[in-house]
Length: 211
Image (tube, rainbow, N blue to C red):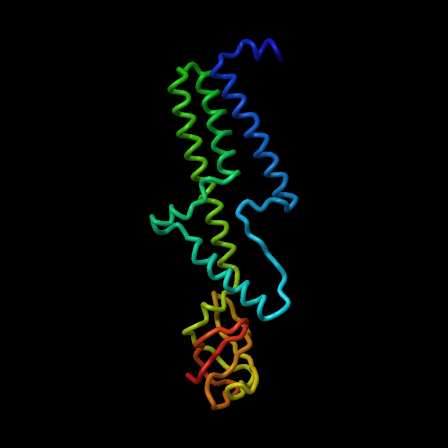
C-alpha cells in the first residue's frame, strides 16, 4: 500500500484524499437513512393533541407546500437545495473519482479535473432535484384543508346553525373522498344531502355555507 501511495502524483494523492472520505460519508448517510436517522432537509413530524397544535401543523404544511416546487417552472431552480451535506458529498465523490479515472486513462491533469468538476456539479444538481421531487410527492400526499376552500361538498351529518355545533360533510379533496367536520356560517340548519360551499378553515374544521 505504501509503495502504491508513493507512486502516485501529488494531484492523484489529493484527489484520492477527496474521493475516499466523500464516498465513506455517502455510505454513512445511506446507512443512517436506512435506519431512519437521517433528516437532511430538516423535516419533522410531531404528534398533535389539540386544535392549537393542529393549527400550527397545518400552517407549517401550507408554508412548506408553497415552498416546494414541482419543477415545471424554470424559477423552480431557485428552490433546489444545492448546498446540503448530501449534495456536497456527492459532488466531491463524483469529482474525485471521475478525475482519477480520467488521469489514469491518460488525460492531462487540467482536462481531467475540469471533467470531474462538470460531472460532479451535474450529479449534485440531479440529486438535489430528486430530493426536491420526493418532498413534492410527500406534500401532495398530505391532506391540506386549505385546498377545500371554494369547493362544494355534501352534508353527511346535519350541520346545526351558526355556533350551535358541528356536523360532517363529504367531498373530493386532493383526489380522494373525504369525510370532514364542518360548522355552519349561517343561521339555516343544513340537512343531510344538502350542497354546501366551503368558505374557510378553523383548525381541523371546515366552515361552510348553503350553496
